[in-house]
Each structure stands twice: as C-alpha cells, then as structure tokens.
Image 1 (cartoon, helix red, strand yellow):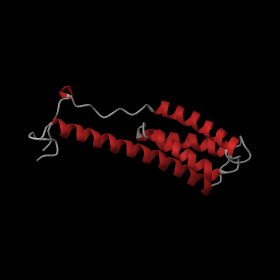
Image 2: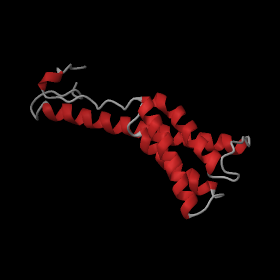
Image 3: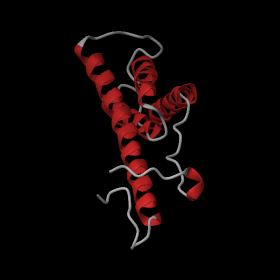
Image 4: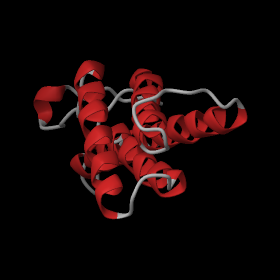
Length: 143
C-alpha cells in the first residue's frame, strides 16, 4: 500500500540536481584545470593518470547532476584529456579504440556518480519518511 505524505508535514523532498549547463561549466573548467595541474606536476604524455583523475572529476560532478548531463560531462572531460594531456598539446585526434575507451570510462564514471547520488538521496528520503511515522504508526514500508 502506498501512503501519501504531504510535504507540509515536515518531510523534506529529495534535493534537486544541478542544471546540466552548470555541471558542464564545472566539467570544462575543472578538466582544463586538472590537466594543466597534471601537466605541470607529472608532465604531459601520461594519459592513464589524467584519465583516472578526470574520471574522478566526472564522478564527483555526477553526484550533483541529472543523468542527462553525463554525456556532456564525459565529452568535455575527454576534450581536455585528448587535447592537452597527450602530445602534441592543443591538437584533437581520434584514435578509434583508445578514445572510445576513454569516452566510455568518463561516461561510466559520470553515470556511477549520478546513480550513487540518486540512491543515497532516495534512501535518506525513505528513512525520513519512515522515521516520521513514529514507532506505533504505519510507515510507507508497512503493509
């Protein structure tokens, strides 16, 4: 049985995800900054390290984004990875399997971050609703 609880009863809604353009702006600026930092510290030509760092960035951005922002986040991170993390810097190339793998990793990381956030928020909302019904009351999970 589904029990409807009015929002005025103290139940808080699940947080709204950030708009995709803001997530993409963060991906663009964050990816360029991280690649520049990596190039300055470990040097260019280390795409494995850059891919790992940008995948973490994509996952972190996914935590506050909608699922529809994942493709754009992956592409923006890939542009920085492809254009500046591998020599020659500033030149975009397409190396078939390698770049498809990089895009898949970045897209997967963004999706994992978003899915994780949705699960955590849904679980927290469920706990808030069941806790509000009290020990003697019926909660949404009670049949």
